[in-house]
Amino acid sequence: MDTDVILRTAGLGKRYGNRWAVQDLNLTVRRGEVFGFLGPNGAGKSTTIRMLLSLVAPTTGSVELFGKPLGSARGDVLRRVGGLVERADFYLYLSARKNLEIVSALRGGKDGVDEVLHTVGLAGRADDRVKTFSHGMKQRLGLAQALLGWPEFIILDEPTSGLDPQGIKEVRELIRRLGTERGITVFLSSHLLGEIEQTATSMAIINRGVLAVQGRVRELLEGGDNVVRVRATPWETALRVAEGVAGTPALRVEGDAVDVPLAADRVPLLVAELLRAGTAIHAIVPRRSLEDYFLAITEGATDIAPRGGRGTEG
Amino acid sequence: MGILVRLELLKTFRKWRTFIGFLAIGLIIPLVHVAFKLEGGSAVRSVTRALEGDFFLAGNLFNTYFITQLILNSLWVHVPFLISLVAGDSLAGEATAGTFRLLLIRPPSRSAILLAKYLTTLLYTASLVLLLFALSLGLGVVLFGTGDLLVPGRILTVLPEALLPGRMALAFALALAAMWCVASLAFFFSSLVENAVGPIVGTMAVLVVFLVLGSLPMDLSAQVRPYLFTSHMNVWQSAFADPLPWDTVRTAVAWLAGHAIGFYLATWYIFARKDILS
Image (cartoon, rainbow over all chains, first blue to last red; front, top):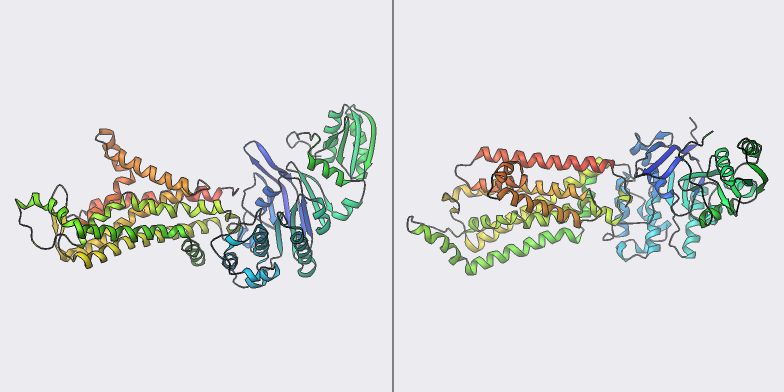
């Protein structure tokens, strides 16, 4: 057992009715990482985070925290995790301090309330009712409750949403410091590539509930050949084949071009498969940017082929 | 569990909503007493006048026990409403506020949190019913004094004063059993929705429909009556019967407890599996 692995999901999936919000998700987060979980709105980030924190039961697959299954060791592992899920909500009729004391008591502790209030810059408003707080202050208090007891692993869902530029800067700075100064592993979701680029060491991109790519931020963003553009006809077949080889969704861009995230050493396999499927290949071009790819899925301006079930493995 | 109950009590008793019940009872009971003090003499005489032809009525019949007995009729609808205000909010309120996301990502299991919330709901209900009895009896003693209890009904019963403290305590316990059952129903509804209005309306609707269903002058009504928990809600009236109908009391309490446990188990079944999307 790799003791450095803090979080591992295996085949994690969630279906609401007949729509899959998250499908076959395999994530690995290691100790000391700031792991950026990037995806456009509605990509399945929050559903994933809710499954990691036991708010939502997975339809398929499992979550392991610190090497133990969340399903059976829930109390044990959640004691070592702090979390903020979506908008920071509190008991509005209670003071900030009382709210934190409640969370602290649920974690089985009592101390540290003043320290985290100080860390997020709310010490001066500790005894005011949360009702009187602005959105930005609630969001800071949300961070404070996640930090209570300085857990080993902190899961933050869009922690900078709704903050002013100064607040965003401070929160990002705080997240970086959590990793470097306190050795806390952070799982951070965002729909902003820039935010992940600035704060995270590793990242995964999720789109339409499916993992598109996962790796070290530096390698992914500077590697330059992580996305391949395929021009082949018929493009429908090319897209299907590309997805089969990459194991992730591909995008149709401008006419018969298809973009797919793919490592350079898998391009020969892609060519072989395209030929085997009987497509006419016009060009296969490595493209720099994960950024372009991410922008494309964020804008949703291009078609994303629906993935047919989960039959694309291998 | 002690810590979880303490946290729930803290949340409940810091909420304005919780005090609506205490406030309502604290206002209505003195009003009723004052009204009886001003007008009640004639009201009770109209009851006793019919009897005076055949019986000789002596002593202070218009006393605290008599008034309290009348006030207990608020256990049909008024008190259940005040209970469902809080019981219906217990789970749905956290969904509305989004605070399940604060509460349920922590080590305590959902079962433990649910039990703490249920116990807190029962404690709130008990404090409300206790206030009703204590205020009514206490104020009554001051304004009207004590005396024998005249129990209206098909058979005229007069309970001697010496028995009444014990009978009132029994009535309190039985009323509490009925109100706990109502609280359990509201608590169950609270697990189904994300807003407290639904559970409140739902609880009152069930009460009214069941009460009507149980009292229609039809064969069908007579057939279903024993199976409706509302038909056993008036078990506190047994405390004023002479001799005490222990069989009726036992049956009613068993039905009420059975329903309460059933409601709780149904709530647990739903809540333990529920996806928290609020």
